[in-house]
Length: 127
Image (cartoon, rainbow, N blue to C red; front, side, top):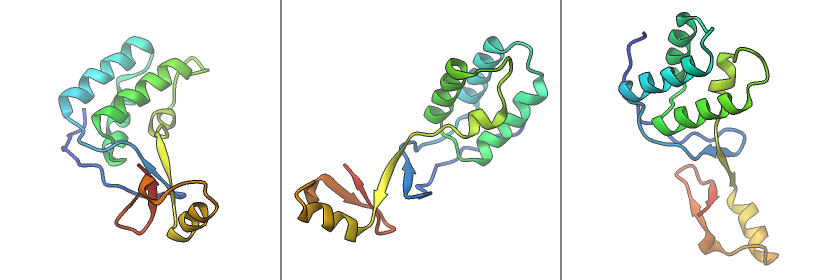
């Protein structure tokens, strides 16, 4: 298996969305989760798991996101075997908006400022 390092996921805005996941990916947890994959898809070669673990680490996964991604693929895989992309692409996100968009929404009475929190990048998310 590839070598693991404990990472802290950083908040990254992509397409005006941020992941709800943060935290660390622990090697012990990752290994336990790969056992779930092997049990659900026993025909997968061990090389698949090695590459998946490498890609999970490089994509900044934390324990919670890994667990949820694996559960999602187990529940939704439509083909006999999953792809690495099905695991890596899983994320739960919240929308970020600009200050001007927030002001427009407040002025229209759609929301209140106290319902929002500003991120370091001057984007706003609903609390």
